[in-house]
Image (cartoon, rainbow, N blue to C red; front, side, top):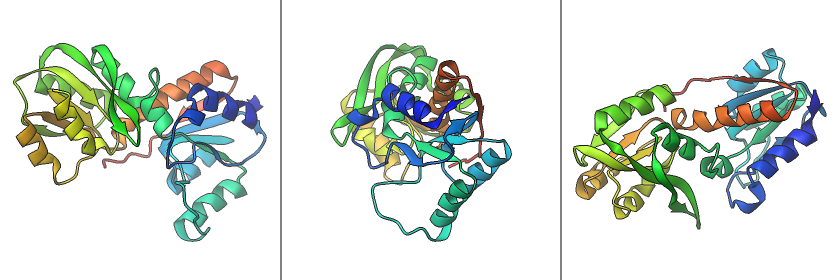
Length: 250
């Protein structure tokens, strides 16, 4: 057992949230009971996750996509029901958005690069004045082999735009909704850009830029960092931890 405040303080410091500008309110978003015996981890804050966490005996929930995004919001409708459920059951909610995207050890993007055995990994793709992704070089490999490996890691089928070279060497990754970083990937001379979700312009940007793009799903591309954060917390504190996968193909 530990305390809510010790867990919050430790994660905040490890992810260096004070140095990351973000629309998300990173850290403690809803305050629950002071003592913590079990922490549930998930990708996105929603009522389905909250209900499963409560049934699993959670005192705290840690997510990548939290509830608070830099604007005032009435406690009505779905938002009100979500907050109300947490307060009624005294469950704390912690959210970590860009700090988990860009973290060099347990961030989604860094971990996916490491899973590809990439070398010479560097920060990549600027977002509101800060880099949130990573790029590097892998042994020359066919597109299908790289995509297959990423699909296994993330647990979902990728949407592939195959407009790059036959053999891939230079790879960049920005998880989630990072498709708008495609021009950065082209300017960087990458062979493959990996992200979560795409929008309509992406296909012709790839064709004209002669680059491959693999979109693993916003949700699926951002599980890996949450799982790594869970492992880190389990090493720091004497608490039970569990990842609850509210599956989402988008």
